[in-house]
Image 1 (cartoon, rainbow, N blue to C red):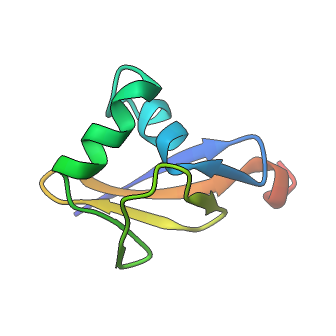
Image 2: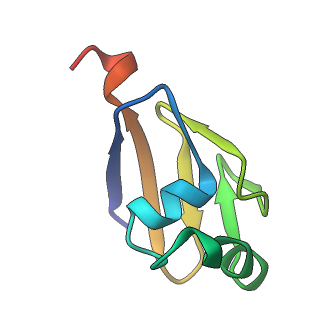
Length: 78
């Protein structure tokens, strides 16, 4: 499975913000429901907290949807 790179400007993004940025949900209010219904793994650990901080090179895997890697422009100097 190919990994999609999600670029962020800051040093971290919350899981809820990530879901919206990656176009997986239409609004932040849906994040809690999405996380209850889907298997979401952050760095191979099951995660259901929408406030979980994702940082540079973290990998998010969502069953039957895909795999994503966080790239922080703030940390990479780009």
